[in-house]
Image (cartoon, rainbow, N blue to C red; front, side, top):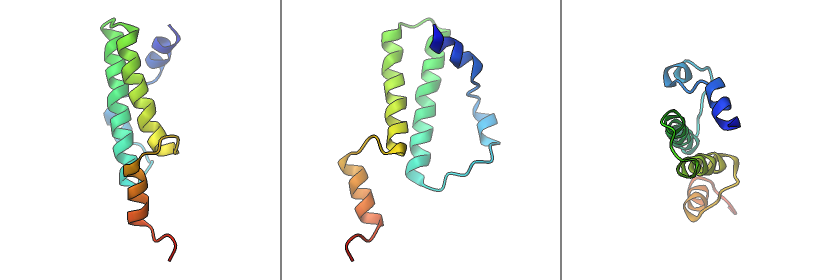
Length: 91
């Protein structure tokens, strides 16, 4: 399994991530990153527990959804409402 090997190579230790120098200034991005990390940790646990790949696919899709919220590949009414509420458009 390529994914299993890749997850073994990548360390998702939260303490190591907290020492990272990167600063996220957008609270929406920060929340999405935390949610994506949570889903990735579920996948890692699933791999360690030999869960069905069908079950882990749900968590992978959720992680990708949260990354998409940051990159702009996912748009929804709440996100658009946030944009119009926080920025003066058309004034």
